Length: 259
Image 1 (cartoon, helix red, strand yellow):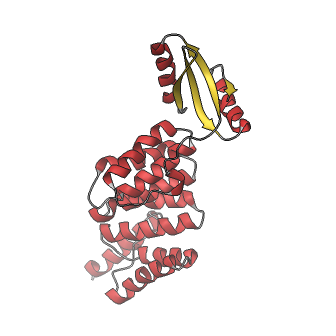
Image 2 (tube, one colour):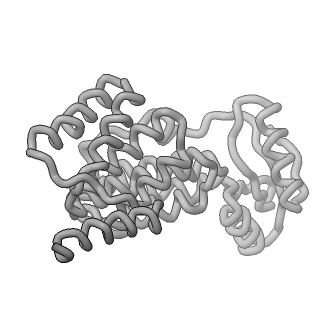
Image 3 (cartoon, helix red, strand yellow):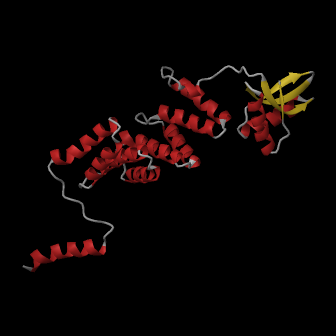
């Protein structure tokens, strides 16, 4: 009789001693386990994110394989992100990556984490995740989406010089895919610019322009009256140019607006 009583008692003891690790329910029949997961994406696509999150949490209470758990945590993370709960989303995407996920969704999980990190303002970590997806270049990875979001992130951080080659690479690798409007290349048409220096020797001007580009400024060389002028940006209004001049001065450079 002892061999029938002791195992259940041990299970109860472990449950008491390890409250942070509650035993999961045994795997139910497939239709029962499948319904929360099937219903979750339906709710998500209808933008009913709170019910979707509840369904995925219910699904994750079942005993699942690593790939099934990763899929559930991915969808839960997406739902939380849409509900504005980015910190919880980062946690869920991180747990999904630890499972690990199946190869065909690994890139999507990492993309989700990058989006959540970006929403939290953790831009360096988000940029690292986007670049990792792009560099891995797996056939199933959302490389095109990662390139677009990396470019948007870089532009938002004032790193236009770094963003430009990303979108040039995007156009080469995905020639049939549309480029978002905010990333479309535009012809410079503004009448105002900011001047940061003027040199009689072109090489000296080029060195300065290169340094400015390395700091995220859209610097170029204009030859005017036998001098090489280092200028930044082309702006439609003087106010925009003056704002850029302030950024340059804050970065330690002399700067003034020119037409």
